[in-house]
Image (cartoon, rainbow, N blue to C red; front, side, top):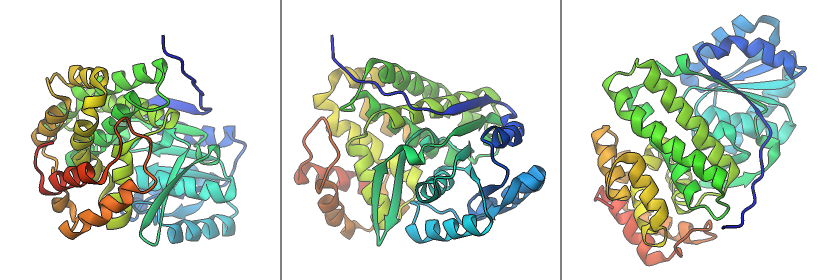
Length: 351
């Protein structure tokens, strides 16, 4: 019998098809009346339409969310929220928009409603990663945990296949690292395993038919579970590397996760044989690292950091940053093996 500690996080989740129609009720349920709608520039039109449908419940729209939550953008958003006298935040989109909502909440204590349109999972966590001067730092505080999450499967039907794949693999990384987290516990491990099974049966089906509602529903379900894992326990080497690479070289978030995951699994495999067996079983492969690397290729995702814009000369800087103040990890973080991991990930070699 293993000893463990489990802390349940507060929050309200509505899951299904058409749940976005309940947004006005949820705003009122929070005793709010002036919601600031957040989006990326690409989704500004959709955000404006949502604001129109909310009518007087919408205070306005801020459509400047970008990857890695740069501090200057967050500070601009806070000023807009204050000028509009917003009393809550509605973040519609992926991890970039959710991150901006969290950054505003950190600075203002405004309640948050998140409507995810990808499989990022960060909407279920009290974790905020912000980038300043090329360095991404993370913190954990209940001040940034959203009060309400509306999962609407219909909003994921138009998610491009390539984004669906990398966003899904990003969520898989949350579940994988939860299985060998320092704070692992039986409940989170069960949730993580179910998340892996959901993605194992949904990602290939989405590639085959992006409008498959059942596959989309399974992926969104897996994302909710993976996000729950991410919020409940600490992450390890994989997430440290992705934070370093994303913040330092401005690499695309989900694609970086998809590329690094097989290599991080291979790094930790010798120390976690039971976990590796569970991952392999979920995806129907003998070797979890090679199996996920092969799956990434079959799904059409990039498998090298050079393809997403990382310079080869940046490997040494990444090694230095990854080994400074490392996250807890089953296997000791050492410069030599981390350099080899990054070299293989940069060139696209198998783990």
